[in-house]
Amino acid sequence: MPPQMFAMIKAEVAAVFGRWSGRGALALALVVGLLAVGGLEGASRAAENVQANGSPAASFLKIDWSTCVAWGLQARNFFILPLLIVLSGASSLSGELKENTLREVLVRPVPRWSIVFAKVCALALLSLCTLVITATTAVAGGAAIFPTEGTISGQLAGFAMSWLSDLGLITMTLLVASFSRSVGGVVVGLALYLGIDWGLGALLGFLGNFGVEWAPVVQDFLPGTALKAWADWEGLAFEPKRVGALLGWTALTWVLATIRVQKMDVP
Amino acid sequence: MTSATPALVTEGLTRRFGDRTAVDQLSIQVEPGDVYGFLGPNGAGKTTAIRCILGLIRKDAGAVSIFGETDPVRQRSHVGAMVETPHFFDWMSARGNLERAVAFAGKGDQSDIDEALQLVGLWGREKEPVQTYSLGMRQRLGIARALVGRPKLLVLDEPTNGLDPRGMKEVRDLLDNLAKTTQLTIFISSHLLDEIEKLCDRVGIIERGRMIAEGKVADLVAGQSGATAVEVGSPELDRLRTAIEHIDGVELDGDGLGGRLRARLAGLDIPTLNTKLVEAGVPINGLVPIEHSLEQLFLSLTSKEIT
Image 1 (cartoon, rainbow over the protein chains, first blue to last red):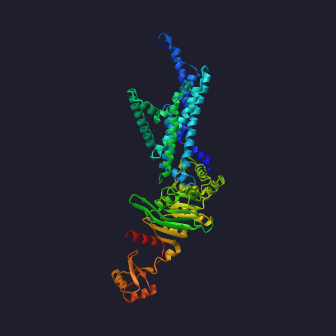
Image 2: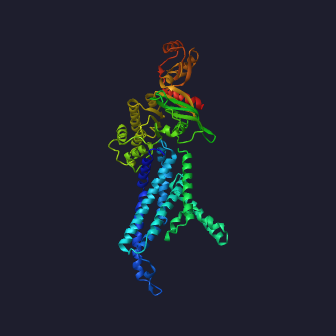
Image 3: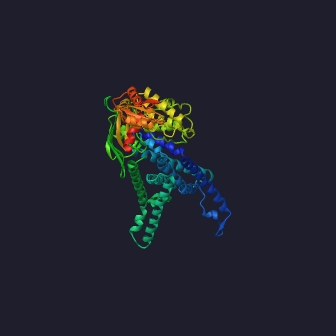
């Protein structure tokens, strides 16, 4: 580990948080938290005026802070914020390759793996900040407006697991970015990667329905399924296979991205 | 490590791109404190060699040593580099970009940044985003960035690339100042032969990836030919040409400027040539000695290689 590792991470944090994608992610995290609070408040008012099976629709909708935080968690992991994390990761590697700013750090006395490490740390911090902003806004807003009945431990664990999912997304992004010199190319590449994964998942599900026993087992280990490990937050019922697969894919893509950066020629 | 350890040594440095050998068995030695000019026509392999030296691209063969270090990471702790046009985070201030460079260099602090900014004449503008900078200012900021890690060897690849005459002069003056006032070893590639001649102690000239001449500038320029070269003018060029062909100790060396002929004197001096031409009845309206220059040497060496 180079002695200047902490300074490198600080420098990468300044770069990641200074770009529009980083600032946009932070701003959107706040908006998402506010939307969860405002959305639930709006839904509760609307539900009072709507009848379902002779009862107010509000009786079917649980209006409390735990629902508010759950909405915040779902909204946070809807595609826009993860997309901004992907854009931040892509700008951090392929953007810097394209703009030749990566060259400047590669001529410094640091091993290339430490540059990738610094980028992952900075991006992970960005992801953590977005999660904390959304969670704090949803919890505080929910507590201020709605009854504080029920527990939010599952939701908070879901936020924590979302950070692991984001870490996986970040390392996958960096791996794809190490093969592309355009941010758009990374987004398309990652979409293709996850699209193929989705198609494969659908095929395995189909095979599972026809009694192929190994198909659902393999399906649990696909990267796309692993990235959704956070979705099992209710009752803290996180699926160990999914979490394990997430950690495995994160480690594998991190190592592959590092090897790729280690070997690449930088003009 | 002793003070005699060369600043930079490459031995048999080779890099191929497919069938093309961009750098071919290149061996260079730069002594500490030297200002070394690395010359070559476009596509000769200068930038590829520099990228191999800096570890930006892989080498296919050969070895690089910087102040005796063979480990690439340790090597780079001695080096400050600017490869072609410098690029920055444009939205960041000049100081922000230099702070980033210091962070990755692992050496230097705010006082080094202040000193570098003053040296390159950007003091007072350092808080402005780089996107507001002119090309010349960016180039100077690139040199400042190369300096902030307290390097012992400064590697500059085409530092005046794309600059207008004013920008070129700014960078030239800056490098001149650096060479005179610091103990830095400077390795500079450029097309500006006049500047290189004034700035550098030693030069290496490469062509098609191979070193074709290396040595002290004065020695190379003086030794480019044992003969004195002259340009001879006459209203009767055909008679002049015939006369020169018949005089021993002089040979034609092509056309000169303004309808003159260029000749090399080997064993004759200029007054004797003049006397012999007058005796041959050739009217002479000019006889100008040609001063040897690095540019001449460069052109003669590289054109030989091309043909």
